[in-house]
Image (cartoon, rainbow, N blue to C red; front, side, top):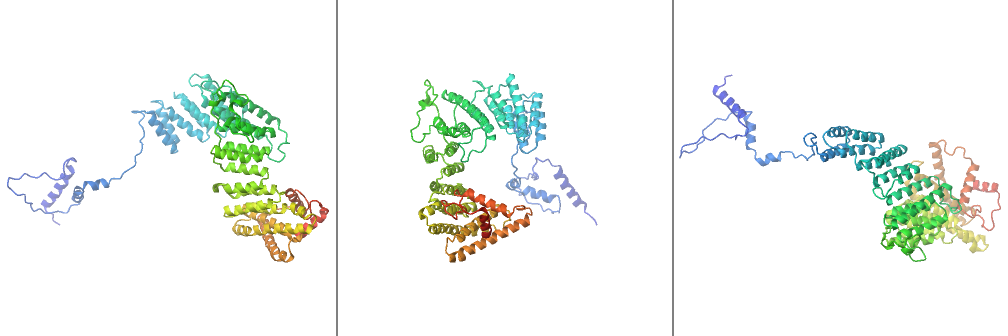
Length: 637
């Protein structure tokens, strides 16, 4: 194939000119000047196909706006600071913080060590120490602390605060107390940084979490009137440590024998120590040196609740002294008449603590412990209307506990209706229903329990199985007034009692069916299924009582109660058979005699009369022997 030399020369000339042309020159050739009056006529030229020339021509004709649109916009990212040309400590600290947030500790530590050669980067070292101590690495953080000082990066006040607060949250309590106290006393002996109130409170918190009262009071003695002046948080930590110490050794005092249990010697010593600390708090408060806030008042109040009945009585005076909350039956105590007040001090200018949810729970618990539950409504209204306190879930729980202690089954109904919807749950109605059970000697207790059941159905989608079971127990226990009104006519008393039991069974049956459908697909040992089976067994007990004592007509007993009892029995038997299949050791060694004794003990715990399941009037007593009771119980099953 022959190639024309002119074509080849022109092609090489085009490539050479465009590749060697400077970048700043215009891509268009310089036009040749023409004589005046001459017209510029395009010369006929031949176009040659060229691989190189085509893209260049397209790029030259592309508009400037389209070229801008093709550029990809990238987000701005902070660059790594240059520690040699511009060693700015702020930029270095920010870079170290971002690196640690990304989880690159080794890179951040290496960069901080290099930056330490050029400038003071104490904040960067603080970030490294805080990173380790937040992850409960005490030894690693203290190693960085010592390395920091060896590299001539002297720690500041924030460094010690980070270490002390991290040790307070550490799970290694003994190591934390040892290291915190050693660093703190080294600070006291050093002239570089004097520990302040924040440092002292942080070390006190370390000792409080560890329960080391000896070191706690040794550090509290280092307080002065200048840099380490004690504040309300200091006394709060001291009282909290005492309360934790007493609570670990305190038995349960919420039972009915609360006033009869003697106070242990260590608890009594803790209360005496707390009272001495409180005297100092009141003196400093009246002198205007500290502020008394709600957490401090509540710490002292809960220590008083650890004591006996008379200590619980003083909680009302405590709130009156610090929050000006008037007691029931008399007006608020004047500020100048508070015991121990100083006449030379202007007490009217002292700011009092602001009541809140914590103090409301405190006074409700104090009323429940001291059994003065009739004052509940007064304090609740005073907190809500006068101090504008919005009750939380714990306040409502303490309120129902106080009503339960006072057997106020009528009061729980109005409080349940006033309870906000966000606090209503399945467990909400258990304590009110138990209150009706506690008030079983009242002839209106079953009516109150029925009202609680109706409120639960209105406010919940599904009923609570334990609450339904307690409702049946209330129906069985609330029977004394039937026998008293009958005046010896046992038949009339049993018929009236039977109507109440039948009404309870009829009210519970539809809810039981809904719960049974819900737990069909659940495993045998699930919590819901166990609650439903316990409810079914209680329903069987009520049905047996109706049939055995002839409380209802025979036709109703065979048609309605009999069918329901048979259905419930099949469900219970199938459940226990499945339990034995899944758990071979289920009820192993639990014979019939043990089961009879367990049922008898459970019955005696629920019914104060203890009159053989209520078959006879409590005035007549039980005349049957234990063997006869066992045979009848086996026949009923």
